[in-house]
Length: 86
Image (cartoon, rainbow, N blue to C red):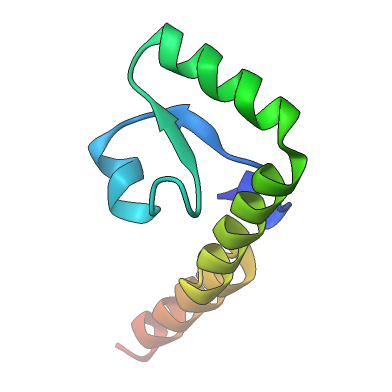
């Protein structure tokens, strides 16, 4: 999720995993064909405000969902501490 924490626009192949994580058209954009990809690239290159809005919403999703490296490392360290007590 590094790219999302940098507030970058996310355009990727439509997969079940992507659709599980992000709301399409609001937090990310997806495509199923090269034609759809090209259409979305053209659209978002001409519509910077829409692109930035999606990038910001995707960033907020990552923050709220605790995808950050800091959060994940904190959770891992908590588990290590628990294992040390055993």
